[in-house]
Image 1 (cartoon, rainbow, N blue to C red):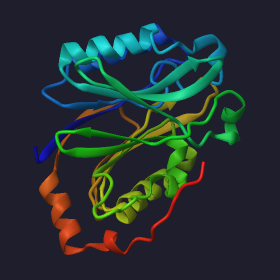
Image 2 (cartoon, rainbow, N blue to C red):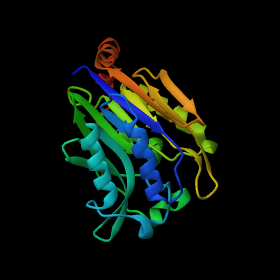
Image 3 (cartoon, rainbow, N blue to C red):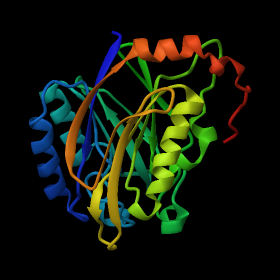
Length: 261
């Protein structure tokens, strides 16, 4: 109960080609050694496309079903974001799929207006903090990283979560911000942080360097790799987290706040 094993998949994505991406990811996932949580990049089936009218699916569509089947087969929690259509609206939705077929989801709150994402998708209104093996995990998507209030621990007697996960399609030209902000989120929230990004060019010729990272609760980088595709597995230790929070209980001095929708 004191450990959590996570696998980061940093990969190139075929632009707007669901079948190719799902074949590729399925092969990578089936090749993994024992793990508990597998984390895919943002919009893992298409890349960061502004074509939800062509590619979005309902929650009972083939991509979510693919996640359900693969999660059950490999006995893993599988997570990543994809285009979802619901009641005539489109969402950049992170799905948290459990091996028993149950799932949670988080709709990206901060839509990237610089790329007109806000003109194609509807923003989310609620956070998702998942629980597994006594760990609490705050799940967020890409541009959310720039907005610390949305990720901030809400401390009411104890920290709200233990691990903060960002899935992304974050371009190399702004990689300094990506790496800096991931470390900042770990320090200010006294939690582990995992950021999973893609690599390679997208359909707009924008290059992504990856720079997927694992950061400990004092902001030290435990793993980082740029440019290359990889599958990396890490076992996080709850004892390390508890020791930081016990010896340096900065979280107790945090300001109370409320997020207004």
